[in-house]
Image 1 (cartoon, one colour):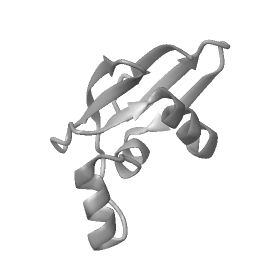
Image 2 (cartoon, rainbow, N blue to C red; image 1 turned 135 degrees about the horizontal axis):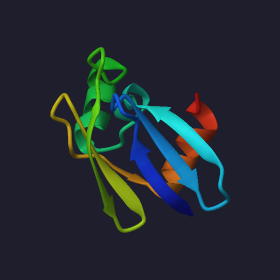
Image 3 (cartoon, rainbow, N blue to C red; image 1 turned 30 degrees about the vertical axis):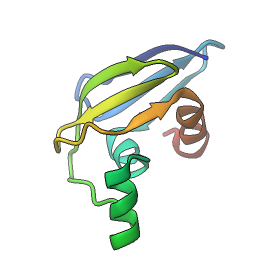
Image 4 (cartoon, one colour; image 1 turned 180 degrees about the vertical axis):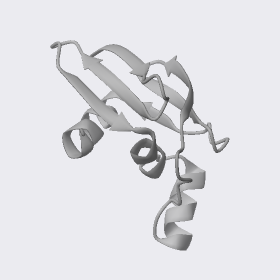
Length: 95
């Protein structure tokens, strides 16, 4: 499904290279805002959305099974993005 994942030089975007050769680009802010971990879901319930610091960056990528755990400069490191969810986000938010 995914051939490669790489953060941009400024760490503010994630480039996803799909097995088909297609590339999509997602911003760190989008990924942080769309996280589906318990903390982010709770923030959406309480505040209507996840607040994201201006200039948020990707600080780490760890593949976990059929997904990736993304660490962010605000210290958030709980969300795992299954590859099908990255596809969905790419279809909605590719810049």
